[in-house]
Length: 136
Ligand code: THU
Image 1 (cartoon, protein in one colour):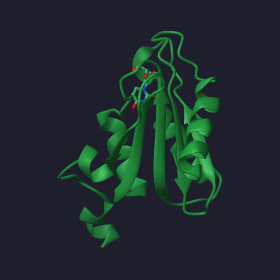
Image 2 (cartoon, protein in one colour):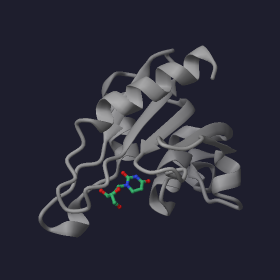
Image 3 (cartoon, helix red, strand yellow):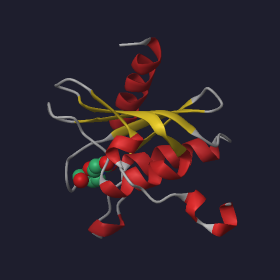
Image 4 (spheres, helix red, strand yellow):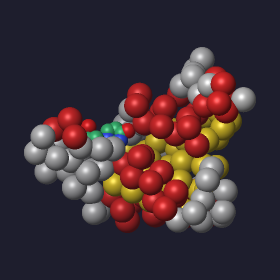
């Protein structure tokens, strides 16, 4: 594991310990390396009204924006078990807003091996901000 991936893993795991997931008991952490060189992390936050809960990835994106950074350069997601905890479909689209398609997303069920994939592999033929006239 490279030094940056070790830092991302540790940040994701540190925040995963603070996840609020009393309903699923599935604690997820996400860490992003941003264009300012900093790492921003977030956890899932569930709610008694189940659909209102949110995933770890948007929490990390919110932390990045709040910290003043704009773009995602690398992503690390951690969760329980031995199978890679890959971002859900909605989170792939949320990452797509702030990351190029060649950005590496590392998905890790911490009892197993991490899976490396690009965002473009996770979300092929995707729709993004450049499709909208106002962004052209
Ligand atoms: N979860 C995430 O935080 N990220 C994902 O990409 C997959 C799912 C959370 C949402 C919910 O709190 C729990 O995992 C079970 O689905």
